[in-house]
Length: 283
Image 1 (cartoon, rainbow, N blue to C red):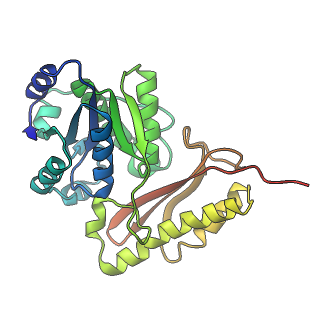
Image 2 (cartoon, rainbow, N blue to C red):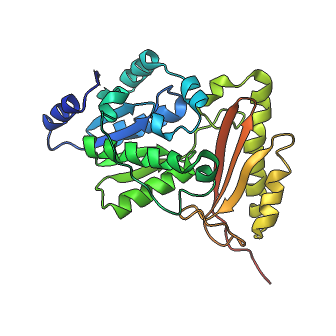
Image 3 (cartoon, rainbow, N blue to C red):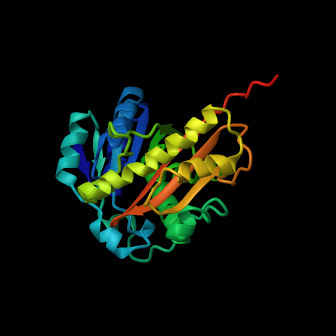
């Protein structure tokens, strides 16, 4: 595996393998089993695999969160190599945002609610801008993302569609710890007590799934069932929405997303579950 730090070198490497399919896994590093799943999928499906490792400063609205974000490049590189990744693209900030950089990619509407409302409009603008750059730099056939970042996935799918970008976005299921906690690079900052409290998020989501499986179709009742499991964890939001538009739902009649965000101790966590309701039998 090669570690490449400049756009010019990466393009040269990609150009030497014309005719092969390319998979891109965009990351901010601090790899865990969720990242590994994305890399394995890319390795199984593509001729060449590029993993980007870039802690993108423009998507952080909290300088303390940016400073505290784990940076473990040496370990990440070893894990990527073991998984068969061809290139780890780890550019410095100056390479991605050179002096005079003045362009932002903004998706309207979808970025203004939930994560956008909590983290500020600049969050998704930063995400879209850096991912658009990565897609243009690597020009992959497929870019791989995790379901845990459900709103980010919806925003990026809209960006790709609206800008007629060629890559296909493939979304893999959220990877969880055996006790249900969604894997996140931020989990390492949880104290043992806070980690135990954090399990309330997944319990709430499973409670929502259980009542829908039992036949509940009123979104307010589904939301209430989830909230009841949060205990002393105060959610920033717990929403029952359309998974593509993030419009709030009143009735669950088709594919539905239940999404939650909360601060547990010093760490902000997000999680979600996709519900596929079956028709309720009548008569």
